[in-house]
Length: 334
Image (cartoon, helix red, strand yellow):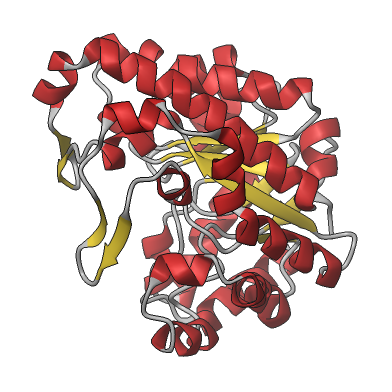
C-alpha cells in the first residue's frame, strides 16, 4: 500500500487506490444509516455518523485512502444559505442574498462547520497511520452555480444571468476562495492529509471565461495550499484538452482526469503532476470482463508513472459492491 500524500508530494513511482464517492449510496451499510437520517445536512453534521460512514469502505475493501463523508455544499450552508437535498432532484438552495453573503463572519463560518472537523479528527484517530485521509471542497465556480441556481439541466446553465452579473460574480468567486481556504486549513488541522478540489461544472464554462472562472480561482486556492504545504488534487471535470492549460498554470500536486480524457493523451500532455482517475464509473455496471479490460487500459498506460487509480467521476448508486471488491483485487494483483 502507498501513502497518497507521499505520492503527491514526492512523485515517487508508486501506485495508490481509492474511489470518489466511495463512502455512500452504493453500500448497504450506508443505506441503512441514511434510512434513519432523512436530513442530509444534519447527517453531514453528525460527527459520529460521518466518521462511521467514512470508514465503511475502508473496513469493507481496505482501500489506501479514506475521504471524509461530507458535501461541497456545506460551505454555502455555513455562509448562511439554506441547503436542502430533495429526493430524485438533488440539492436546492434558498435564494442567494449578495449583501448577506458579503457580511459573513469567518468565526461563525468555522463554528458552523465544527462537526465536520470533529468527524475528521475522530476518523484520523481510528484510521491506521499509513492510510491517507482526504478532505475536499468545491471550487468557487461550481459552488457559484448552486448558490445562484444557474443550472437549467445537467448540461446547461443560465449564461445570460452570468453575463448580467459579471462584476458581482468575480467578487463572489474571490470571497468564496477566502472561505474555502479557511475550510481547507481547518480540515487539515483536524487531521486530514490531502485536499481535493472538485470543479464539477468546469466543463460548462464558455471559452472566453475559462481563465477568469476556472483557472484563476483554482490557481489562487492551490497557491494558498502550497504555501501551507497542503498536498492538493484538482478535478476540473469536463474541460477536455484544457486539462493541459489548467495543469501548466494551476500546477496542483495531483490532477484527476475525467472519463472523456484519453489516458494516452494525458500521459503525453500532463507533466510534473500525479495523474489520478479516469475510469468511467458506468463501466462498473458492465460485465467483469469489461471492467477489468477497461481498468487494465489505465494501469498499462500509467505503469511507469506515479498514478492514483480512481474513477473519472463518483461511484454510482447502482454499483454492485462485489464488483468494486473484484476491481480492487484485480488492481492489487496487477
